[in-house]
Amino acid sequence: MIISRLSTIVSENRDKNPLYLRNLLKQELQGLVLNFVYSSKFNQFFLLKGGTCLRLCFDLPRLSEDLDFDIENFVNFSLKEFAGQLEDYFKRDLQVKNFSLKVAGNQKQIYLKFPLLDQIGLVKAREESNILFLRIDLSRALGRSYQKEVSFKSVGIFSFIILRLSLADLMSGKILAILQRETGDEKAPRVKGRDYFDLVWFLEKKIKPNFKYLQEISKFKSEKEVWQELEGKVESLDLKILKDDLLPLLADQAFVFRFVKDFKTLYESLKPR
Image 1: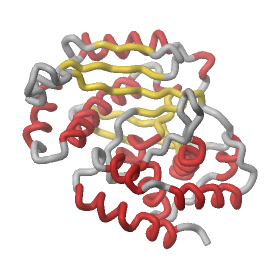
Image 2: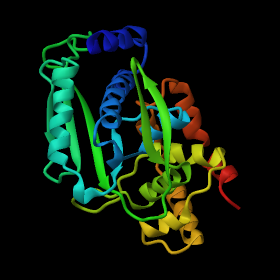
Image 3: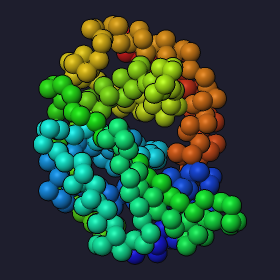
């Protein structure tokens, strides 16, 4: 079933950017993971957030690479049991051959490996990787001022109810990602252009962040301080980074170039006064 569906996606999108096509394939796998999460006994722990949540539940017009969750009641959540059952789901229930799963040493990421690109026509030479990767990022739910909401979704033959953060909370998380992204070693800023694309999307839709929640999970004490910091980030953003990060996530490459060219003008016109 999976091979057939992924092969169809490839055949219908061979004219697309190869990196975009790989992310398009990941969307199918993300749907399968979400079906497991929200149809399992673990469903009450998982709050979906990030780009996948915005795409699936609110029609954000870009792809996402990973699945991001906040875990509630973390002390009672068994990552080992969850990972084991997720692995069984792919191997036993979905009959995915040679699938492998690994939990990172920090106990915050799960890496899924699908060695199937040759079966769907994406590997042309022996030296090319045959593996399609998918990462699941898990964070302990922080604060008390977020709002839980639900969305009904159908992905292929599966239907499930997603438990997620509200749009105001998702915007708060996005702003914090822009202001506080760091690498693991040198603590240098790690810019992701997609965050700025999402920021403009939130502002265009006139979504207001949940500042009470943002204050709980960050060092910021006032709305004014947040917007001032954000203004500085936007002003100093390297537009090449914005472009390079967005090209694998949007089908219309010409739109990406237009968006990048007009990004700062867009932000200026949409930002709160």
